[in-house]
Figure (cartoon, helix red, strand yellow):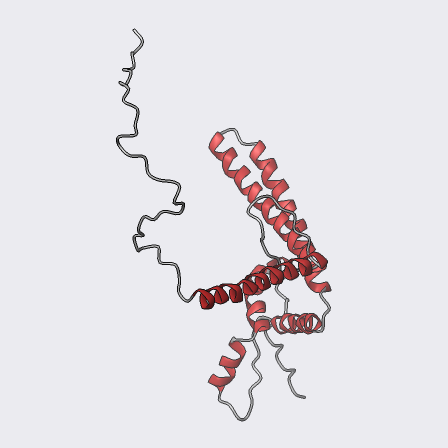
Length: 226
């Protein structure tokens, strides 16, 4: 009669090796698997479930949950976030009650600060759950600022009107260029504002007033007010 095989330690990680790789390669491959890392990190915190929690069973459960999430089923994540939000709310309530029972101001502030941190984490978890359940729609809108003052921007059909208006202004500026070029050709040269012009008479009947034509009247001195 053969002796029964010894039961495997539930906390022992079992490595499946391939004939094509060495033991070191098998251990390296297992060390980077997310399910293995998560289960090993969870193991020290699962004492409340007893000593019979199987490490390999935990790894398999994490793999199954990961496969469901890859397939589009986010129910596990929603349940996890809901549980965390409720747990954090419970921690907030406990710490807030302990803060009220303190007789020293320093202890009261310490417990109340921890309580508010737990409350903030609970709110952040709820916000993450809402974003997961109802993703926000992000819209990329193309709009142009055509005024320096207050304005109302209506996207959609009005954006097309803005584009047409901008094109019309650009076309108007381009249409002025032939006129300027035509003036340059017809005149033959540009106006030189740097050359000093000579004085000439435009009307032969108008002449400058000479010195002798001025009235010989003494100027009246202005008297200031006393």
